[in-house]
Image 1: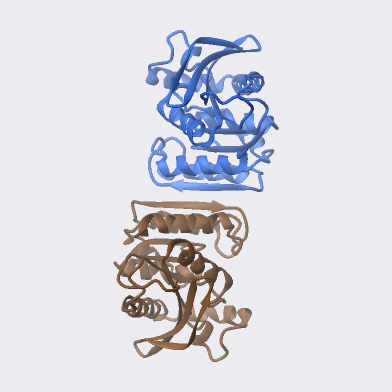
Image 2: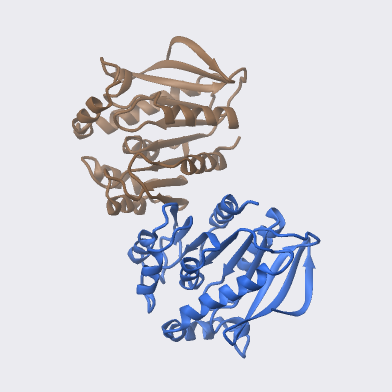
Length: 244
Length: 244
């Protein structure tokens, strides 16, 4: 694990940029922790949506909220061919979006991202102000495309917020198979008027999740219009299961 | 409005049994208010499920919670051919359940229950410790069969928790038409493994609700297995919209 640049502190939250090595890939990430609070704490891993990157506003907002209000650690990494993994830094969302179908179709894409999250978690748990406390995952849309298989593969993750995804696309069989192995508590979010994921395949994915403790929250609106209420439910749900 | 028997006070909550007259029908009800707290306050009307009655445990629990934690008033009335509306007092749930299809099929059943709730609300708002404050409605299953048309007809109701119901049964066309006129914020609950209401008709009813501010919460389990988490979400949702 390599720290990049200087830590930034803002209203009690330290943000640190890091790189982690995973099977020869460099995985760029961000870690948020409380200022001047050593020792282990719950950790929430946040997967951003397609075309975006690890420092997109809602990721930072969620991470800072978990740190400031609950004393947690939070971390995000760039998705495959997103953000600082790209030579251009991934700052043109339409370009990144247009290239995502090819990435999603690449046979190793999911396995590599699962390995990248695992390498990141290994490295973070060695940080003295993260430690090996409880771990949660939060990721919608592309954050669920890769996050659901990661949560299914990783017993250290004890609770997950997933959603904005259905049993469609090149990895739909993998998603369904992995959903059927999930055991941890899951909050699944659906946008009722989602223009990218139709209703029935989303309901089918929720249905496939094997966790006995799962719930679906549906809100009106387009794909990206998840309301503040559901961000708050997300935090409440994570905290209920991770609280120190 | 006629008070029946003596008020009962238990840990800060007064429970009063009343009868209201509605188009010649006697409507038996219960009112819960804070002890020794005069003046107007938010009111939540609670519709019980089929085969049950106004003093079933979850109704009393919800009412007492609203009174004790939030200082609200809460009231419940027996449904048509339920509880104290019946000569036998409605204490045999299987007998009451077996007679409900005929009641639900009776053409005037919904209009009468809407009128009964309106007469009850008129009477309650004249009580000095209820008054004409904000009004919410909470009702699942049969409490939604009659509650959705009541909320659609009654502009005094500003927020509703509904659910465990789909576009099926003798009043499905009425339910759909009324759903399309709803405007207030709605939390709709669905049990994913509901043995009485299949998934698609329930989703169709949620879809028909015209309120721009609506959300669906889905949980695994049978019809009657609504988890405590959703009762808490119900209360949070009502309080968000009714808070004094």
